Image 1 (tube, rainbow, N blue to C red):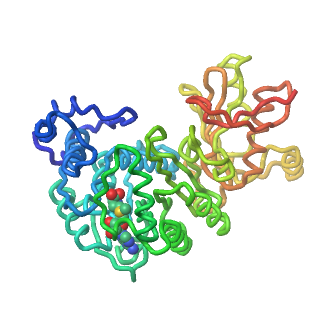
Image 2 (image 1 turned 135 degrees about the horizontal axis):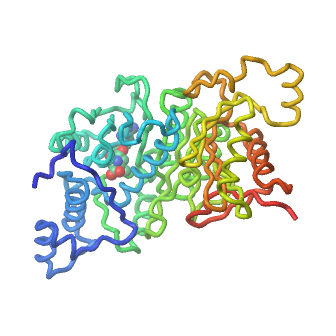
Image 3 (image 1 turned 180 degrees about the vertical axis):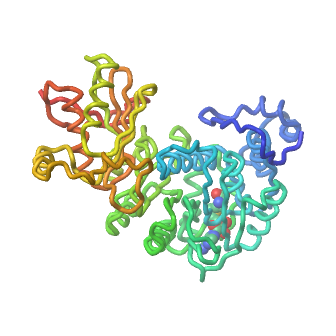
Length: 461
Ligand SMILES: C[S@@+](CC[C@H](N)C(=O)[O-])C[C@H]1O[C@@H](n2cnc3c(N)ncnc32)[C@H](O)[C@@H]1O
């Protein structure tokens, strides 16, 4: 079977929560079996040729990708790189401009990978898993750039991945040099360390776990000021580019970098950011951060790690609230929800089959003050409710967009757009009063666990 990309074949997302089963992989891939057999049936994480074959065999089996790598550049571990791509997919999927109307697999998405490396791993994984994704990639290192070009061509992806052998003069986000106006996201695995000494300390710390062998060259591992400065520069450049890119993201090698980056974003008044923890059960923990100068809000589980997350003050406000409706039946709740939102002068579209709806508004239209004002104006005919545009206007007039879903025992309210925290909380509180009319106050409480990655509105005694 050819391992080249076949545009028609269905892609099944691999799950690397459990460790890779070497026996199974050896049965599936003769090259992997060969390398293990030559070492008395044992795999060695300390042997670069074993680690390289592992990467190649997983890429071939799970993504139908081929890869050629030099001995003196990073050999990317697939589970970690795939976890970052999956996080980006969730980030981009949950913040589409049409609120998910176009099926994600059909959406045209453009990504930029800063520092593709010899492997070009992120663009390859992105294109292998999403047929309508395209990538631009840069690298400052000529050798990595040339290997990356080879890997793109050998997988027949030249028409979807464009590479630039960049220079420091171009900055880290060279949209103009790449000749692109806009992109959906940028991603980056930056050089983590600021000096050789810092790198040796970092690698000897990492050497305590079995995934230790590192074939990275200094250009891949070291940068002036380390990743803090590198990502800091990216934030400064992104501030200038603004909404030309919807999401700017980066992997972080050190947890200590996260507070510095979040502080920098807050200083620049960035209200929309997301923090992810890749492979939370892996021995080497890696963080990802994404920020946007736009106000499309990501799903809660993408923006706030469900388990093992950092201190709460480093996380963005929750984008999902759950209202306990366990005392009432689903049909009655759906009815109240739909009626409540239908009579307000906001855009509202309800799907009774899925018991969910989408709405948006250009301001507070539910508070007592808003109702009084409206009455005085005798329900102006130009209200959004009456015009009912079918797509959310992108002219800055919409200050809150939301999705509501009625489920078994609870209703979920998702913020889809908007940066006004007070307005969002007031909207959730209004819904809560309607769904659970016996009263009570808003008291946010984060609950973890699969179904509870949401902020719960609890009634105060
Ligand atoms: C840690 S490696 C990541 C490689 C690959 N993306 C991966 O995850 O395996 C960092 C890469 O960034 C590249 N790089 C360093 N400075 C850069 C710059 N200013 N612009 C573009 N690439 C740069 C390095 O040459 C290196 O290939």
